[in-house]
Image 1 (cartoon, helix red, strand yellow):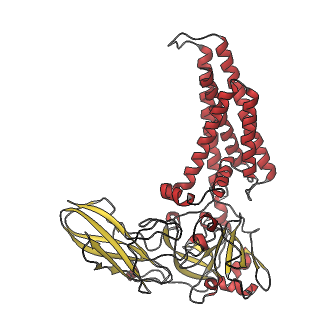
Image 2 (cartoon, rainbow, N blue to C red):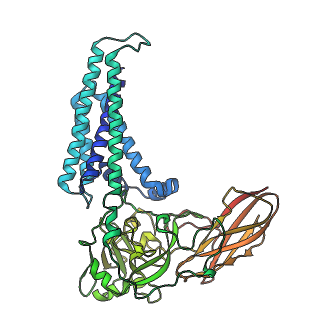
Image 3 (cartoon, one colour):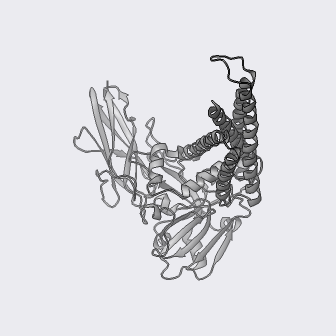
Length: 511
């Protein structure tokens, strides 16, 4: 009984500490969320295969899942320390101090955290945990001193008071944490939308015409709205970067180092391009892919300012926090492939979640080797001398987006009426284009589909095919052929190390 009360007290103390540190993080810009800091440390220490497993399990909810897991483990540790405190309060205090030291170490690695505020936040969290635990245990000790209650008794006022205090502490901790998390989420959100004025692009693209879009209910839109666009990165909290103090440094194997402000970048000729990008973690038939209208500066124009030295075979994009992506320099310099330093997405300033103030967009390459968000540096080096973030974790150094197709309509497992059924979806092979899409039903012959008019070879297309459905259960498969004549393979592979392969296959019931 004594240990169970100690565990309850430790759980409540841990909840109070987490709530306090989250509230401080929400109230004070520059104060880190210790939960997020520890989660980020876990991401940085992940073993090979960790990304694929977590994204496969949780998709775009991977960050929320990790934050919840860190908080749950912290609460369990608090409960364990509470049980220990019933025998040795000093040892429990040392346990909280040790956990605080780990959190402080993680917080000091955050480039957006202030060291003084990191120390303050950690001290508050540890102090709250220790004080609340000792306070609750003193109440439990007083209850124990009154002697054992009669079995089934509900009249012990000290025991009921202890449970009320522990429960109230737990609830207050949860409320404080929720408020802090809310403040973190909304803080500085208006800054990007209200203060950034981006000049009109020198080269624009026309809105998609009628032939570029197939009118099929449930079909993914040709241009995905910003709010619906997938987001996969290693940042548990969306970074807030000040455009006025932001700098882009171009260095390494260049003739002259260049540093650009945000206004310098906006003063260069801006171009609009439709480009489809995809995450290497996308499973066959997955939704970690999207098409948008990106506006930015040609990457090769910026590189020309610095002068790329002969022998510089790799371009490394580095984010504000040191995250890196690398790809062959020849791709950046390719006149036929307009890689961009993007500042706008679908006509709006680049959203914070998608890399404000600037990010790289490279047609035809998976994001993990190219699409650096919150870009702060471009380094020219060699392919042999540097491995970007994901390469040591088992992912390929070269990441061309594979030729893929997906069935959007009907959905997997759907029941449809017999008769004419429209099967539709999207297909992509950025920088190569899509030449053809075919479907087959129940291992029958492949049948050509109607394609939307492509916006460019760098974007996906929509496709559809009317199928005369008969009663029973049926299997539908899709495959695409790219502009080079290569047919999407049927051989299934996992996303690691260079993308998932196979035909998207669904089962439907025809009633």
